[in-house]
Amino acid sequence: MNISTVHNLKELYEIDDYLWIRETLKLLREKRFNELDLENLIEELDDLGSEKKHKIESLLEQIIRHLLMIEYWHNENEINYRNWCAEVIGFRTQINRRMTTNFYNYLEENLSIIYKKARKYVSVKSGLDTFPQECPYTIQQLLDEDWFCEKINQM
Image (cartoon, rainbow, N blue to C red):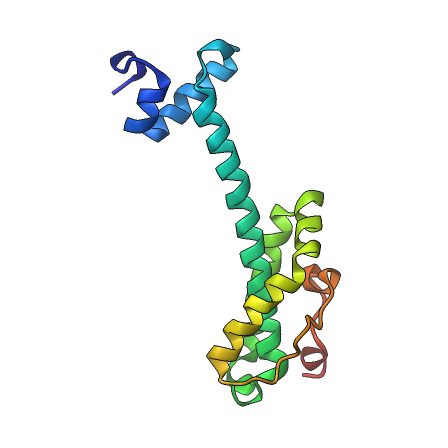
């Protein structure tokens, strides 16, 4: 299927969104702006921005989860702490690759909400309710690839 078999980009969007993207890129490169499907282009760009924001939020939540398990889940620590440390490093690498000033500000503004989700998860997973009510980590600590909580530094 190609664009010539479809009447317009809006119709193509409903049939094959990947081909729609390719055709939209072609039109943009050729500066044929009047032929663009602006309604769906705006929607796609908005979705892309939201997807990126949710991805970095998810990565930060994973970092917090693992740091909490390392620091507070004593029964599992001996068996899992190296794995948990490695996971933190991996999540930090991923989040820092995607980080922008805008995303950093977003994470900083929403740290308490992200922490609450992470805390709830580790409470259910561990069966413990000993985790701090407020996030014990700063955004700088969470993103710093060389920083680990006190527990790690003692091992």
